[in-house]
Length: 41
Image (cartoon, rainbow, N blue to C red; front, side, top):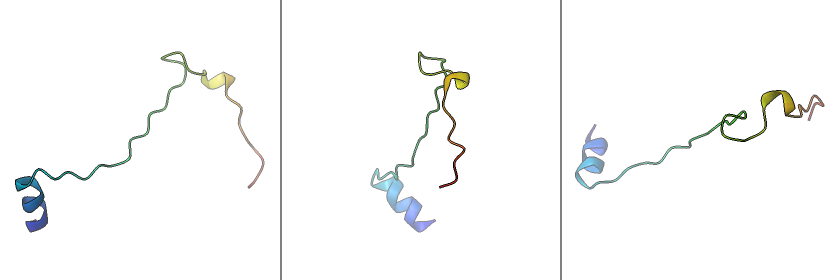
């Protein structure tokens, strides 16, 4: 809690990864058009 308070007092933020999945809603590839890799890696 002390670390969080110190970060807040000094305007320090920790970014976190954001993932956006677009399945044709904004012009991307529709889910039915996507190629699915079924080969084990």
